[in-house]
Image 1 (cartoon, each protein chain N blue to C red):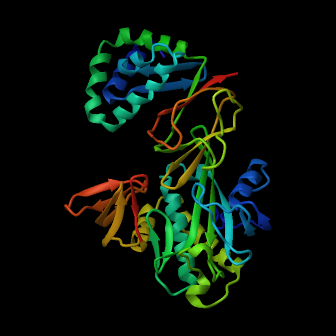
Image 2 (cartoon, rainbow over the protein chains, first blue to last red):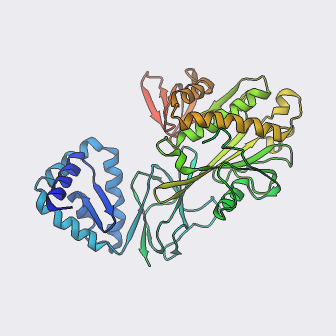
Image 3 (tube, rainbow over the protein chains, first blue to last red):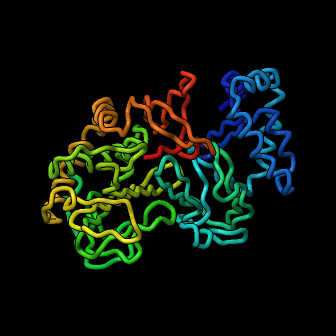
Length: 173
Length: 249
């Protein structure tokens, strides 16, 4: 992907009014975030900052119309916006965020009186169950795609979650 | 896909913790093909939704799980699987008993306002890919006595006849294959019409608990994601999901 294509992509993302776009190919990965989101996570390792990360996701999802104009303005000077986005990617490249692929209710355990699937510090391998997301009585068991260690649990047990909301931070081994 | 996807293999076991758990275990060990049905005489730890217990006397009811290959659901709204299973239970019951079968939003099966079946669908995701769906069904067939004052009924209570469990299962598999083929060929409007026409209190006044409040509303629609549209007493239409609203029988 050349710089022009990246600029076009950023303009496109800004127009679409989304917060974050992630494209991953074989030897290439780009993450574009609006400034609004980027400001919230200047330091990925600082715990309180990470927690706040979910708040804008929820707010914006609830008011897509109101939130849309902001990123368009901010992303208009497309070229300068690109380097920070790339830097961000390096910052958190050692941690992987597992996100919700659907709206629903987040459960950390297989049943009300059962132990959580994972805790902070748990060592996980690909294929291990991380959580259940219930949507309309469909119980979705989410398996990890990566091996590593759970660094942080970002959503509260039994709480409603939005699409793409960060759920876990994993330090891949 | 052939017409006999569900029920191509039937595995019978006497006693198991839960057929859904057993199905998941066999699937993990790749000891079972997709579409297979596991039928148990008795479940020690029969589960409903999140900790709800599914009670059944040994050998009297149909308890089974089937496994669907997740990729077959690609492009279809996930809730259609739920609709499909509920419709198939309704079709199975209609084959054997005369009473009108109702589906209660989102996927309960009622006869004469009593519960006759339970469904537990568990989807296994590998990252963003749906790997499999395990469909667990408990259907009250020959049980006539229910403990703990469960407001439940059975095929035998409705018709005063005993039924062969395997025969009931065969009919269910036939109905599920029929309905699932509609889902695969994206004939959603057929399924939707079938679902709505059996929906308890469809286009009628009914009571919903919305938050803490009891409201009299008219049930107008259930969309492809299972969201219900209610006409409020003000005349406005409001949409709710299951975490926000529940219908009372």
